[in-house]
Image 1: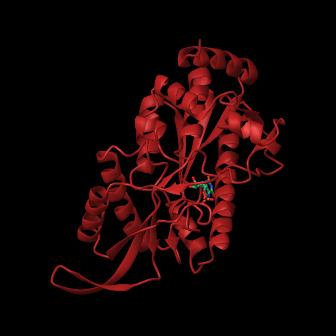
Image 2 (image 1 turned 30 degrees about the vertical axis):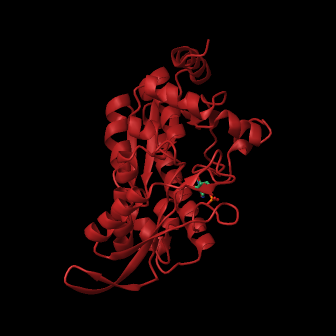
Length: 326
Ligand code: XMP
């Protein structure tokens, strides 16, 4: 009989046996998998675990707080937060090409995480303990997809914590390796991980950086965050979170159109709503969502976000369109 309590008990035993009294590090992204993996390891070895959360400033409204406050409050995890927002903005300045932006974000992420990992290792060394283990939220489908091999080669290339340097040799702890996504969610809920994290829809590692079409700036991030928060709030209110796989909100930052808002003519930016239905993100269909919900989202965004004067709906399936615009 599968139940999350048994999985937790079994994994806690295995993690303790693997780790002993060594120190463990885990990169948190705000997503389901890394959060549940961290909560499980925390349950097993407590303060031997240090989590590292790199705030790259490309998360949506409330997500950094979910990790920094809610996750810590519910799990008691020892957390190192690295505020790298300025660093990412500087690195991204002037860049508009999607692949270049992705590469920059990936590269900066690894550098910041490496530095943080080195600090954690150094601090642990002061207490005479070695950091030997790295937690990964690898799920069963990831294992199957990559041929079931062992070790670091398994880390997907898009994974946030790929490619650690040679002088940081970690053994992997992968407590979710036998689980499917719905089982990971059940385990997370049982461990008390906040529902907003457990039920979070897929969100790309490069975050809002690939949802601003054009250069990423602090002002544009604020505009997109505000529009995105409204869309998410209304989709949740309408009870559509489970029906919709994910709904990227995309800011066409280099496009302007004429509008009338308030007392006069405006020359603002469009945002695109990209609601999709999917089983696995390999293919997707645009979601035929209710017009009245679309209307509410459109009205609220154009009323509450002055820089946006037009809301458009993406009615393209995948293929030919990818889910993300970049
Ligand atoms: P596309 O745009 O390729 O997206 O249709 C498929 C799914 O993958 C997510 N995605 C990413 N996830 N790092 C991630 O962790 C990435 O670089 C990345 N790019 C896309 C996307 O949100 C969708 O769920």
